[in-house]
Image (tube, rainbow, N blue to C red; front, side, top):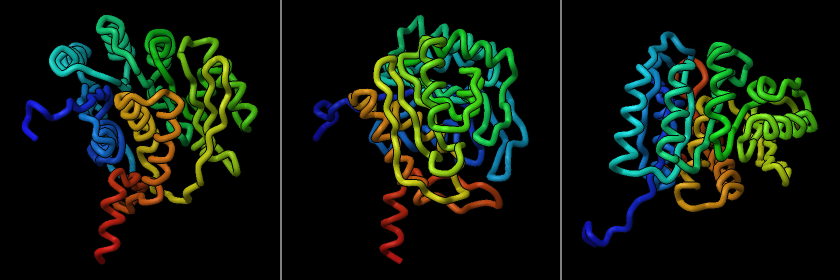
Length: 278
C-alpha cells in the first residue's frame, strides 16, 4: 500500500502539562492516543519537574505560546477530537477557551484538573472560576473526580446518590453536554464507579476494581481514551465505556517504578507479551 492509498489516521489534540516522570499529562495522553491508533498532537501548557514521589516545580507556558501550538496543529493537520488537562492559570484557560470557540473545535473532553484525587487543590480560585465559566460550557463531556465535582456542584460527595445529585447540578449549572463524575477517589464498593448524566439519561458505569498503589495518570488516561474513541467515530457513551475498560486493563498492568506511586501500563499488551516470553 502506497502513501496515496493509505487511509487517513484520525487526529486528537491534547492541551495539557508535561510530566517529566512520564506517568500523566501529555505523556500519558500521547501514549493513550497511540494505543488506539489515533495520531496524537499536543499543546503544552506547563512543564513540571516531577516523579513518582511528587511535583518539585511547575513552569507555565505563555498563553500566546499555547495558542500558537493549538493553531499550528489545527490549521495544518486538523483535529477530530481534543482534550484538556492541567491548564494551570486563568490566562491560559481564557486563551484555550477562546481558541476552542474561534476554531470551532468539536468533541472536546475537559478533564477539569483542579484538585487531585487525594483532595489537594492544584490551581488557584481565579483559575477555578475561569475554568467553570469559560471552558466547561464548551465541553462535549467533563470528567471531574470526587473533589472537583464537589467544587462544581457545591455538594459534599460521600455516596453514589451524592454523585448522582452532583452530576445533575453540574450539568444544569455549567452548560457541559455530558457530566461524568468519577468515583476513583471514593471508598468501599463505590470506588471506581462513575456516574454519567446527559440531561436525560443517568447511567452507573462500573468495571472491576483493581487494587494497586500505582495509579498515577488515571484521570489523564481516561479523558484521553474518551477523546481517542470520539476521534475514531464512537458515540459518546460508547467512547466512555471503552475508555473505562482500557483504564481498567492499564491499571491491571500498572508499572511498579520509582519510590512512590507508579503509572498505569498504557501499553499493557506489550507487558503481557513480555510475560509470556519470560
